[in-house]
Length: 302
Image 1 (tube, rainbow, N blue to C red):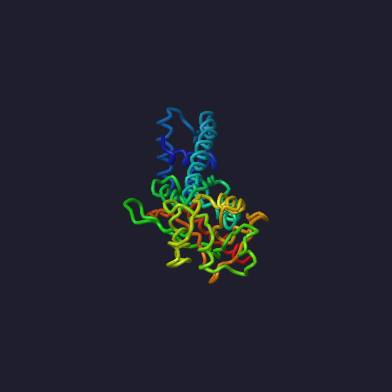
Image 2 (image 1 turned 60 degrees about the vertical axis):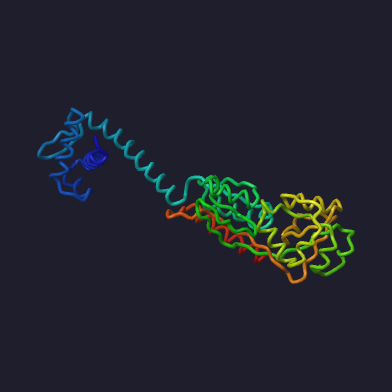
């Protein structure tokens, strides 16, 4: 028994006329009659009573009409569900993000994507840039939101990146530090302050961006602590352990015990979307990156 035969049978059962059913199916009547006859032979019972004037369903035909309609509806539903997966309207998406994305693009992109793709299960993972690149390569992440980092050249899947958001770097200082009265802090003044920094192995891009900001003086920076998350850096700054260079969006998180001061020259830091390149375009991933661009534009315009 083939699905095609069931569709043919249902057309005749609905129309109770082979000619009208054939026109509905966009085929000629003889092949339709042949297929219905084969179905009757296969099930071993007549499905229609035929006369020169009318066609009616037998009791077996009425039973099969109900069963066949449920079967066809179920198959059509499965096909629609599979199309939704192909079109990115259903499925799963795993997204990693650096903690600083929490205060810029992440809330808006999450809200927007879930509104546009409610049947895609979106899982979010707070990870450093380095951790995200590893998980992108092993396939446990679909998209990463990383800070200033570019994928290192290693064997394995090729990773693509796109800059989605840019903001200034700022100096976070304990409230009672003498530099808090300044309109901006110069590179030379940074070197006089104990600094809270980040491990290069996990956050190579951001550390390199700070190094670029300090130039040849980067090697002279007095690092007293290395931390993984900016929330931890702020806690150390608030405790008076030292200062830290962070993205400007940290203003939303900084307590009153911390003063945020711009850095001379307004150096910037960037958030990038990262994903595995492949020949087959992932529709859900593409939609998320589109939402990410929109979210970043809204944050930039605010």
